[in-house]
Image (tube, rainbow, N blue to C red; front, top):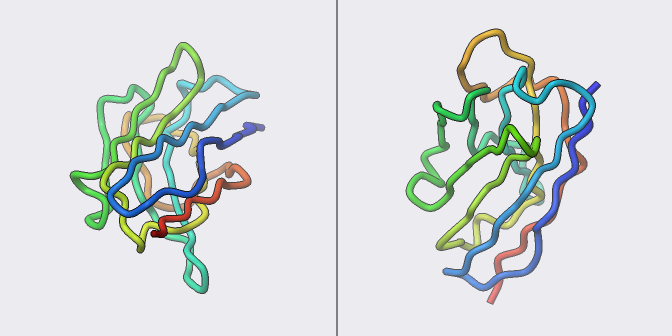
Length: 124
């Protein structure tokens, strides 16, 4: 079992920045690819960004490329999401997720574990 706890959400103006963090516990962190997903009001949950076990491979949704950056610290069992130039449409609950992986790759679906989410509201 892996426990994931997100933090860092809040209210920000358009064009602003936020940094989300996810703390993992329970199993060997380096066995898991990690990802961030989000769910806006009235919409389905969608993939935002993924990072491989080593941190060397990342993948981004087109809507956040150039604005969001994912990173992980395997010594601290954490994964972070730096979000810059936030837009109104970035408003959503953001979820951290983990997937066991034997390969160094990213995943955009079928994650094994989920956090409870943290709310990001972009509003003027």
